[in-house]
Image (cartoon, rainbow, N blue to C red; front, side, top):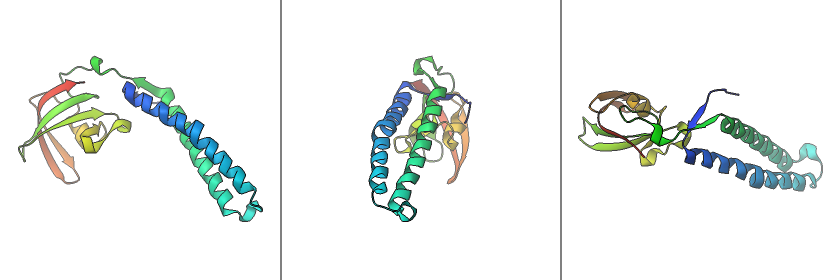
Length: 159
């Protein structure tokens, strides 16, 4: 297991806690019932349903342990504590694409909270990492799979 702290917003932590609760108190009992049902089908050595349910149980238990470990390392970050002089985790960044002329607003979040369809990007993504540490007025050149992006940072805010 990892000992690195996991930085999250309060909402991110709540989302993880809800996911863990669902796995432990909804999914686990369903799997236990499924295993019991398949055991009653007869010879376990040739019971594909039983083996599939046991494999699903192993996967579920692994996921529960991973979530418990992650939650034990969560450090909740309050956006109010984040300075706006540079791009940091939980910053909202208004950039201008210097090649296309359009303005884009990104929110920089931990990997578990990203939602690329809504321009909520991971701090570990190419764009998030490329903007990190830059100040308003600076230009970031970011290599992405589609090519080189050139963004001028117009404004940095927080929620």
